[in-house]
Length: 292
Ligand SMILES: Cc1ncc(C[n+]2csc(CCOP(=O)(O)OP(=O)(O)O)c2C)c(N)n1
Ligand SMILES: [Mg+2]
Image 1 (spheres, rainbow, N blue to C red):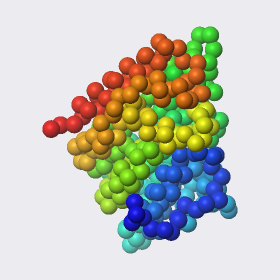
Image 2 (cartoon, rainbow, N blue to C red):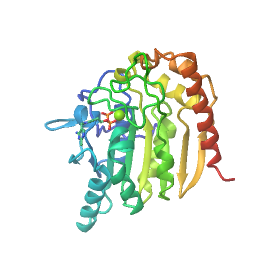
Image 3 (cartoon, rainbow, N blue to C red):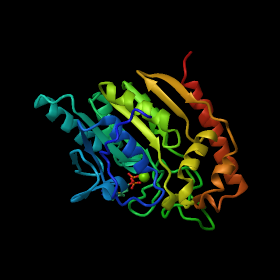
Image 4 (cartoon, rainbow, N blue to C red):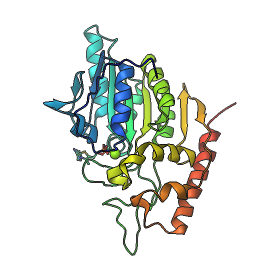
């Protein structure tokens, strides 16, 4: 971490909410990728708080077209640059979880199948935050959002979090990794690895959202760590399909993580047990991906 350049390519003055996990990730990522980078942003919080012309925080060129086609646009940028003899430029898409797990998944899957030479980063704040906290495929079981309200019949999201990293591994791309802003050294190493490889590279980076999750803005990093400790978010990487677990979860009770967040405040013991069961199964599933 000491070797990171001082130069900020994602600068101060952006308008993210206090305690937002996303700028922590982007600032680090831009230090790793460096000035020879072009970014793509679909509609999401990052575009709004960091890349809305003329008040943008990025010191590299970027493009925004539509919400659903990040992977296609980034692929086009890269192909265009190659034609111009600038194939060494890093092309990075920074998409949210809604723009990845749901609305952008067809473009993402196609680009991965074609092994386009891009880096696709999904920062996962577990809902459509920019438009006012709607549930996404990446929202966890039990979470309140404006589209999974708490009422008599339903209480938060009934379904469980969609496992996009595993979907991406199934595409047989050169690199897939999960990371978290709570584990910066691991995250930086993975960003660096992604930068130095060729072909399709996918990273999903866990980035808590105090506004949508309803927690104290000082607890962003703590919650990111707790999600890994309790097994709701596993840190692993798949290089050419070979999976390595980077941190074995401590399997601390999911309840400890849940009780710090207003989005889970209504959850009954039964619901928390279901989420706990899901975390246990997730760890079984993730660890089973490792072939000795
Ligand atoms: C086709 C289309 N549908 C809906 C929208 C409205 N919209 C803009 S940003 C956004 C939420 C994005 O959520 P996510 O990708 O998770 O990023 P976050 O806002 O959480 O950073 C939505 C629904 C849009 N711009 N285009
Ligand atoms: Mg989101």
